[in-house]
Image (cartoon, rainbow, N blue to C red):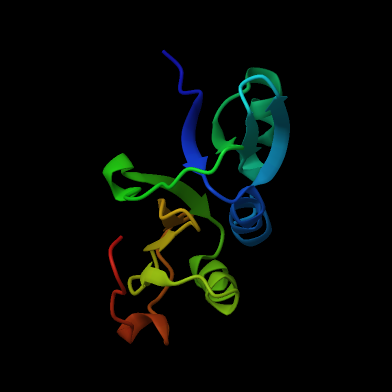
Amino acid sequence: MQYLHTMVRVSDLDASLRFYCDLLGLKEVRRKENDKGRFTLVFLAAPEDEARSAELKAPELELTYNWDPEEYDGGRNFGHLAYRVDDIYALCEKLQEAGVTINRPPRDGHMAFVRSPDGISVELLQKGEALPPREPWASMENTGTW
């Protein structure tokens, strides 16, 4: 068995690509437009997974955008995506400056949770050992659900 991808439905492809690519740092590795089915599939890979994605088409995140408007609620019932990051504090700061709510701040220097524009919970895990606790994160309360 081999993990291939996780699919999440998105209601605004541009907002989702901004979140996943511009802010989180994932890379678009391929895109499929289906006129008959009226949907677009965009496959993303983490920078350290690009070579495996090119070779195996895995591991990836598949964004599914249905051209006809649909409302998606919940997201949490799906669970969450998880990414290992080089500097959890720097990424959380970048996300926060871009208006993303840090639902579970990286108080411990190890783990944080944020949400995509469609309410998908995204867990961020510090690569290697946890970073020493640092303000403003160490004393920041949780916001919303994660």
